[in-house]
Length: 345
Image (spheres, rainbow, N blue to C red):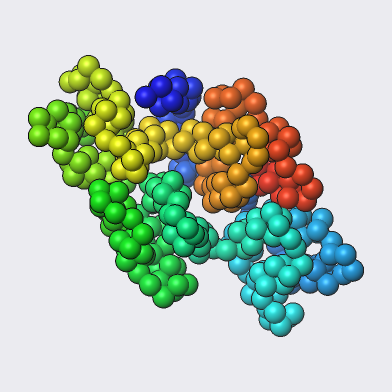
């Protein structure tokens, strides 16, 4: 699989192993988001300014954009509450009436809570003519156990149906099994790596792929959906010692269709999640036309998680910044929102 090999060749390998920073003598996780809490935050003032901008003749998009991209999600949720209390109308509904096209889409995305946004994306991916399998795998493979549980709760609340039931109805076969396994939210999130377990898992995967009666997909699904990223990386290394071909090549040879793409994406995420997203952003902007859905989905959902890492990987992999490609591929206030989410470059 040449494309897969190219992905691993391009990703950054000398990543900073220290994911913490010392604050007042205590170690805390480093922040790799691009949107931080706005200092001196005043939800009443923001709600008032948004209302004036929406109701003004011609709609003042500059003010709307400046507020939405400079407040983090928690602050936006507070603005929504104050806006409805003072204006007598939901902010998302007001913006939907005032804005158009891609600017409307990204603005409404920014107003949703992370779990509600993911639930919306999943609903959109399963309601259209033909399921968008890539979006389902992207979300399920990159969210934490806690986030998966929150998504399931939000989906049930928003659409009055269990997410698992939708997956069963809209997908089939081994692909369904893999998605449901990820929805169990029981992935090991312990950062420690067990070398002996990796050796054992590699042996299981080798046997599962070399089985004369056909590949044992269940074994791949079980291990790839339950182990942590660092643990899987060690397993991949152990697998290479057992086989003449790499694990992704084995998947390519033995599987086809949605389940192949699903398991390979899980492998990519385990190896380097930011590079996985960088690759998706690049595909969304290369060639003729731009996939706005992908730009909005990734930039908004990762803006308070690891977007800085994604931007770094993008530049390392493609020798150009995300911001430069956005400047070339988008325009107007929509472009301004995307650049605001990405931050300076």
